[in-house]
Length: 86
Image (cartoon, rainbow, N blue to C red; front, side, top):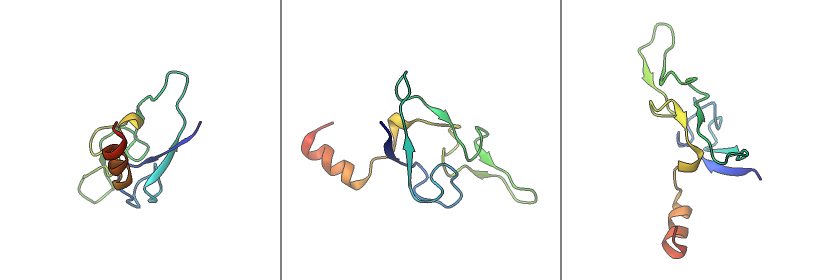
């Protein structure tokens, strides 16, 4: 079953995980919700373009990994947790 999760970048155009839309699809494998290497920086934690200073990766925020089990909670998700727990 494919799940649509909020991207940690918040919808930035530089993000290769969500292509700037703020959401990405993830399907848990046989071992469940497993972290994976950040597709934007390939696990390097920074973006480095020739002739420009290094900048923090907008997707993983220097974490090198994306953990789908710990995705950011949207406003609607916060309201749902407030009323239904979680």
